Image 1: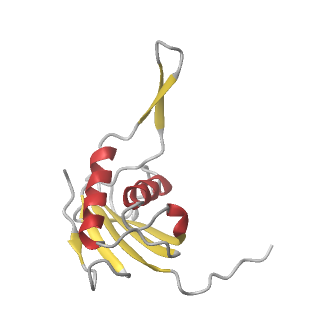
Image 2 (image 1 turned 135 degrees about the vertical axis):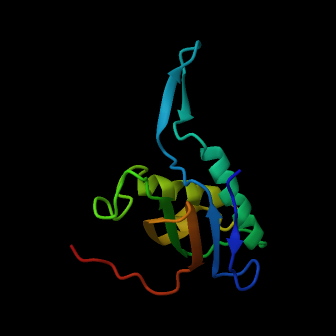
Image 3 (image 1 turned 45 degrees about the horizontal axis):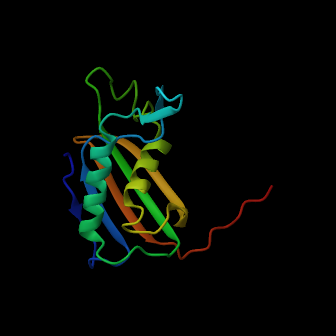
Length: 155
């Protein structure tokens, strides 16, 4: 397991909360399909390490959230960090603008903490995701109640 959770929640089980999970962030969403002898198709997550990553994120969330899942509308911040490959200079690629896809990284986190911190990920009405290079890999997660109005855009 790769989860090295660090919590900075003010009070256990209340919003806002923040915590970190060290380890290689794994995307969720791409699947490989295999036909079975019965003619059905069996789909398997193509991201190796995803079950362990999700388990680490879930365990970290359970350490900081002790209440039943909230039903509030939520604002979530996900700050992903990756180790820069030695073959990639800061000048060549200042940000990790390569695979894995950020939306799939986000999906893995939200699915891991569903039914722990919130009942359904549809409660996340605003989400900010960042990706950067750093000294270690992992994600820092902040969750708070969405209290400010979200202004609709105009067509």
